[in-house]
Amino acid sequence: HPRQPPTSPKPPAMAARESPKLGPLRSAFETCRGALTVAELKELFEALAPSFPRHEVTSLLEYSGSPTNDEDCIHVQDFCNFLCDTCLGHTFRGVSVQHFADEVVGQVLAQGQLRDAKVYEIEPTVIRPKGARVRDAVDGRFGASYVNSIFGPDNAGLADFMLSYTW
Image (cartoon, rainbow, N blue to C red; front, side, top):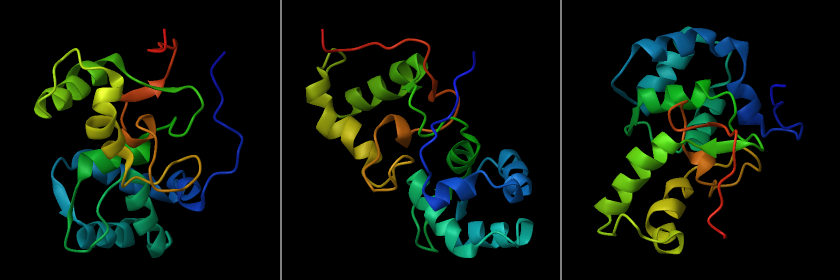
């Protein structure tokens, strides 16, 4: 049986993210591979989804961990991954093995730590900073969990198994 999304009420911006009004935007983002300024993104929203509330664009940027100042740049692919992520905030959401192997290990090494560093050693430098500027999909507060701070099917999805480091 497929897992169902959580039934708890979603923060307004997360509910707005699922709006059918964003269909043209998702298509436009999927074809663009570069970066846009926040101002250009807002113009794109206005052109392709004029009935989408303009103030919600800023909320979506906060939920994706993107900058919100008009002159700042966002990576379009990262924002598209956020908009199209179907299990964001799901109870069974998990980090992919591929993400651990490619991204987490790379960040650990970039921080000058060893490949076999303990979780408590990488938590302050790799794990916690990832979600510090991201609004959590579950409670709407800044400081999202790591799994709710990464987007796209190569990075996170519904987990089939749970691995624990507590043993």
